Image: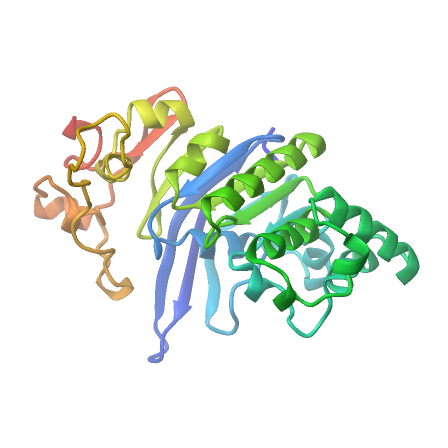
Length: 328
């Protein structure tokens, strides 16, 4: 049984003219207990908006969920009251936000911000909450937690701030962790430490993980399954090893081809996907990768959305005649 089941999620932002521009278009996702699902794609393809939608954290009043359902343990998060969804955020579903300097409040100490999780969700008094906070800071590898707890975010390094954000997200041992670009802006050494920390804490708690990233190297290290997103849609989804070895969609192939190889000829130009993701107002109804695809598209393929088909067991692809499995 799935822990999280997202069906037909459609999210839009209202522009200055009052029109709704759809940024997430009919997304389906599911997560089983203990599973790690990677959601990958270029910046601007809708990954973070999808994550924020799961906890109803879209910017207001412009962001809105138009259609779909988000079933959490069988209950639709979209029909819950504000108080009900607040009781789930942080307690049952923890979120590691992108850019820890922006996720943390610069006006409050680290200790106070971690304390808040225990005060809100576990009903502890401030003294009890601080004991739990210090234990959590030690658990995520913060040196001298009693001293760091009284410091402000700007006094810590990027890697330590990221550990604080992880501590806040995992404080109540949630069943699901949503990690939105958790290693962005970190150097390679700190990135490896953060990934190792997340893996260890997930293993200890048995939580599921939705990992949002554009780094396929991170995906290969951590994920059981991968969903590839482009222009607001999932274009391919498969078990991690299967996706890397037998990609079906032209966009997935382009992403994998752009990974540097240590075994190829030296001073070889790295393949790139030409062009950019189309503007929201310019998105077509059919294959959205058409303007950047190496394959020719008939006009009808730009007007009608291709079906999402299962090409192998648990391996799905948006089967555009040009970019899907027929381009192999």
